[in-house]
Length: 426
Ligand code: GLC
Image (cartoon, rainbow, N blue to C red; front, side, top):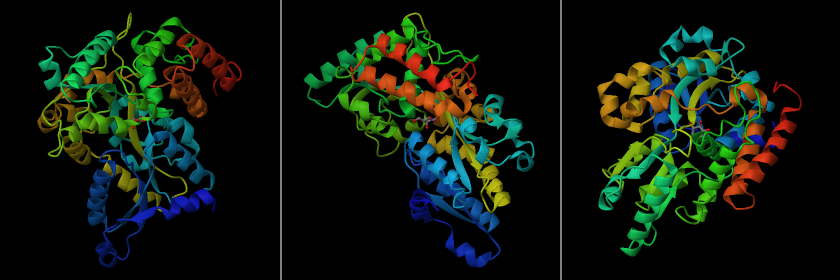
C-alpha cells in the first residue's frame, strides 16, 4: 500500500447503520466516495442509509477533497495501487476517458436502466462499448443575481458581459456608498483548477472563440475572440471582482454571494437550494438566468456533472453496482432535485411538478441544460487532464495580469501541440 493509499484509508469514516450489521450478518461493506461540495455528503449519506436498510449491507464513506482536480489525483493514486478500499466512486463528466482502465462495465447490472437517462451523457460514459458509469446528476454553469438589488437600481438581468460589467459596477458602487463596504459585483471560480477551465470555456465560447480543441482534434484556442474573452475576464479582477477570486472554487464564491456580499455569481445549480435555505440571508432575493454572451457570440454554459462507477478492484462488485443503481434511480434523483437542486439526468423528471416548483429555472433553462458545451474530454481522451491544466494555467496568467490574452493563447497553442505529440490525441 502506498503512502497515499494509507492516507486515503485513514480518512475512511464509517457511517454505516451499525445496527444493521448484527441484524444482517451476511451483508457486506461497500465504500463510496461521493463529494464534499455543498450538501453532497449529506444527500449521499441519506440515500446510502436507505440502501443499507433495504439490503442489509453497510455503506462506508470515503471523505474526499472539494476540488475535482484534487479528487482525480487521489483516485489515480488509489487506482495505481489497485486499492481495494474504494468500491463506488463519483466520476466527473470529463473523466471516463482518463479512468477507463479502472472502472467496471456496468451493462450487465443496469438492466437497460440507462435508457431513461440523457443519451448524450450515457454516450459520454460509454467507452469502447462499455458502460463505465451511471449518470447521477448533470450540471451547467448559470448566472445567479440579486433580484432585490437589481430592482432597487432599476436594472435588468444582463444578457451580455458588457451589461453585466456595467450593472455590477453601478450596484456595487451604490451599495458601498450606502454602507455595505464588502459588496462585490461578480464572483466566480478563478483558482487554478478544473473549475477555472469550466468558467474559461464559457467565456471563450460565449465570444465565439471555440472550445480549445474542436471535435476533430484540431487545436483552435489561438484566435482573437478567445484572447478577447480572457482579456475581458481579466478586466473584472480588482474592479467588479475581488482579487481573492483568483483563489476561489465553487464554495468560496457561494460563501460571498450567500452572505449577501455580491450582486452576481457564476455557479452550478446546487447553489440554488442552499441560497433558498431557511438560514440564508439571500432567501427570496435570488434569480437565475443563462450566462451572458460576448461580442459576436452567444450564451454558453459548460457541461458538468457527476456519474457513479464501480472500481475494478472492488471485492464486492455486485453489491457495489446495486448501490450505484439505487443512487442513480429516478426516486433518488427526484429527491435530490427537490431538496438539493441537483439536476436529474432523467429527462422525465424535468416535467415533474414538484421538481419544477422547487427549481423554477430547471424549466426556464432547460435548453441551457441540454445544450451545454462539453469540455474537449472525449477527443483528448487520456490527455484531457493535461490539456485542461494547460488551459486553466494560461487563463490564470491572464487573470493575474502576468500575460495578455493574445500572448497566452499563442503560448497555449504551442503547449497543446506538445501534449498531443503528433496528428492524433490518442
Ligand atoms: C462541478 C461540475 C464538474 C466540474 C467541476 C469543476 O462539480 O459538475 O463537471 O468539473 O464543477 O469544479
